Length: 338
Ligand code: FES
Ligand SMILES: [Fe+2]
Image (cartoon, rainbow, N blue to C red; front, top):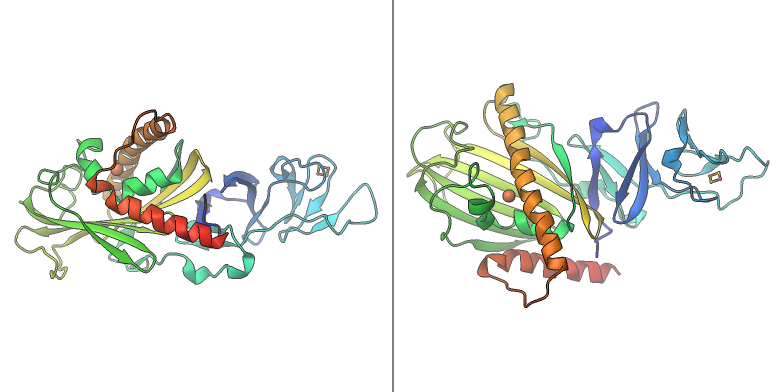
């Protein structure tokens, strides 16, 4: 059900402090904390003795002390003290997970430690470019399978109905979608010419009047989605257009971390090429994104329940082509990993 050899977002970096944070990722219980030097640590959240979650214990300097009989584990997961006896049994060890702090997020590797290569973490172009601004990011827990979120982020069609008052715009319902395969996923895109920008974007774009707009929805295996919304003044957009000072670009990075088959922790960041110092714009974007994702969550949790209780024949439409393709490829990767 999950691809294990992959980096997943475990948490927003600033949320993990010198305190024990319990998480569940790919059906494994994990405890996160920071050492006194600020290094983030991820350990299996289960004492090998009586299986009390270590997150119920406490931190003693950089080690966790189990809250039942005081076993102490260091940041590598090695037991370093057994207060009730002299000998430390060789099996007194908990799994430690590779963890990397990047893009304001903590990335955890859930597979084979030897394959944990941090160059595989997604690159966020222009992250250090002072003309661009990234929101600090936010997260939601969703009561649905992670693949429903990825399906949704490969599906520009839903915007017209789920986000009626914010991201929906005229002229999108019947513009065909093009699907392209990439090295690590799929892109669905379309150009929508000479229409009003959607209500959410109207105050943000840097020009008046109609726009030519690129909707670019990319998903990378197993569960990352990058949605680009690019606006040119009407007449300037199209496949060969070069961005100039009037081009408005908003890139939404979405990271789905499966908790289990029925729950997902969803993190996101928004990155834009304008008004880098305008806090009001940043807040508008953060709150607008969250409002939209709450609309998505409401639908996707109900979809999850609906599909779990499906009693009659299932229907696929043309708009599902990308997500079905993505799911098939991901399933092949999961099968190969096994
Ligand atoms: S359960 Fe952890 S020390 Fe006994
Ligand atoms: Fe949506």
